Every structure is written in structure tokens, then in C-alpha cells.
Length: 466
Image (cartoon, rainbow, N blue to C red; front, side):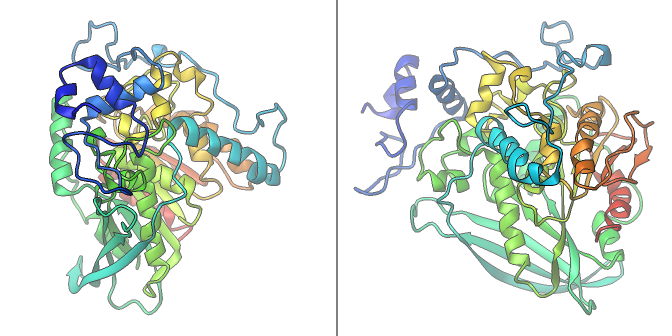
């Protein structure tokens, strides 16, 4: 096999390297291997993205929406009259053979597994069977006061067993804070949070897109609001599980399971990996006597709103979810053309969130060919409560508030089949209006790309369940 450095100068030979099967040898740029351990392969996001296109026999992808050149053929669209090129959505209550789902048992035993299989294959990817176990360690315990409430905070690290491939070390970063004076186990809200380095990159990306993040609103922080209810809160760092870039796909938990090799087209992406980490955090909480593990809610904003929705969909132990400004790849419909498009998510900067197979729908296929859409990801959460939120149009980055609302409406029939209540209306609410009387909730807040204004509304919604 030619060396990696020499291959980078020739596109044709680079592609030959990229389609090496898992477990084969790599050249320069990889760490040493022994007879039973394949080397850890390092690829740039561009190289890995191109490798996946070769595996899928895709020659080119349609460009994503361009927010900078409004005269470009692919200029970003914010005109609602042009936003629904494919208005017909997949029917969540029709089996693959055309039979209608008429009972809860049919949903649980037949339709839900079909929808999940479609997401696993074409959108989010499959979690492998060989994911190693996690050992949790409490690294420190501190006492403090937050918002006038005495609290105990545990700093935890989830050590993922890497005996199968010692070259990759994965440690899940989690902190858990509970009221110090609680006399019984408390509900906990776990946030999918940005670490400082990640936040700097995120802010730079938003600035490049011309998006200004609003200042924090006056009043208590979300943590203080949670503590005032007598609940606890947890801070989970998803990027401690899997890096937020394509170059990291041969490391993190995905790389550990693949022994340092590139993904197959149906392997899991970062969203599933981040959701997996949240489930392992919940595993720990089930062992902590200060936590009522039956009443753990999750919250995520932007890309972590996508991941929180995936976690809620795939792990039925989570009690309630707050999905903030998740946009394309989250609660917004893929079949929409408003703000960020499917093609953006399939591009080099974001494809790592998804399965490799997802790229097909930005190349030879379109979003209308997807066997599922975002309303069915929400439907996988049923009958548990989900609060969907967004900011003002254009001020909320790429997010598509109406597309998220439409998905929430479309999942209503599944909730109703299971004896719960949907949004209760198909009318998009006025800015600032809250729809929180059902088991699916929606609110579009004043201001931009932030989750802060809707915390009081989510807490009011979640209080009915926690």
C-alpha cells in the first residue's frame, strides 16, 4: 500500500486509499499497529467525506443554501411561499405494506421498529453491537450555593473500556448538581452543553454567517430556575464522547468501536454518538441515590438540540425533552426549503452528524426520497412529552421555526393513538405565544439563536410530568 503522504497529491490514488476496508493496513500518518490491532487512520473531513461519496458511487452533491450571496442559484430562502416543494410527508401510521396502524400494539410492535430502521439505515446510522461498557468515577464533590439554594455538585468521568483498542481513549464529562437539603431523590434536567473550546468555534461559525447571539435575559439562570423547583441539573459535554467534525470520525466512541478505521455507510454519526453518551450518563444516575432516575429530562440547543431529540427518541427512559432551535437534522422537516437545507447537513462541515448513507439524498436523490422525516423522529419519543422551541426568523441562525412547528403538528396522530394530546392546532402561533397544554409543546420566542427565553415555559410544561 503506498504511503499516505504520497497519495495526497493524486486524487485518483487518494480515492483508492479511502475505500480501504475496515481492518486493513494504512501508511504514514497512522499510529503503529501489531498483528491483531489495525492502525488508527487519520483523514481530514474533506478526505473522509470524499471517501464516503466514492463508497456510495456519488459523483457530486447539490450545494447547500448560501446565506451570503442572495443572487446565487442556491441562495438561502426565507420566503414561505417557496418553502414547501414537497408538501406530502410520510405517514407515520401506515405500515410499509400499506396497512394502516389502528392500535397502540401495532405502533409499538410493527410501525415504530420500521421507522427506527429507516433512521438507522439512511439518516442517523446504526449503533454497533460491540460498544464497550462505561465505568463511572466521581472525581470530586463540592458544596456551594446557587441562587440561594445550597447544592452538592459531583464531577464525574465516564471511562469507556478501551481494552479492544487502547489507541483511543474516551472519557465522558458530566457534572451533577442536586439540592443539598433534599430529603428524597430529585428530578434532574440534563443539558447537552458546549465546552469552552467548542463554544469559541461555534461563535466563530455564527459570526461568519452574520448571526449575532443575543445577551442573556435578566433574571435567574436556567440552573437557578430548576433548583427553585426542587430539581437538580446535570451538565453533559457531548464532544467528550465524539468530536464535532469529520476528521474525528476515526476517533472518539465511533473510532473506538471501529478500531480506528473509517465508517461504513450505515455506521452511526455524531448525533447518535452524543445521544449514546447521554444514555450512559442516565445509567450512572440510576445508581445515584440522590436522583430520581425515572424523572430525568434532557435539553439541548442548536446541534445539541438535534442530539437531545435523538436521545429522547432512542432511549425511552428519558422523561421529558426541551429541543431548542434544532433546525435541519433535528425537529425541522427535511422536505422544507427554508434556511438551512438537507444539502447543508450533507456537506463537509456537517455530514459527520449523520450516517454516510444520508449523502445520497443530496446527490442522486432528494429529500422527498427520504423514507422518513423529522415528524417521525419526534413520533419515536411518543408518548413522552416534548417541548420544541425556536427564535425569530433569520435571527435564529439556520433554524426553521415553522418547519419545526409543522413537524410537531404532523406527529400529533401518533400521540393521540397512544392516548396523549398533540399540539391541538395547525395554526402557527404568534411570536411569543406558547402552546403547552398538550404533550407536545411549541413556542417561538422573541430574539435570536438561544434557548434562554424559553426555559421558564419549558419548566412550566415539564412540571406537569416531573
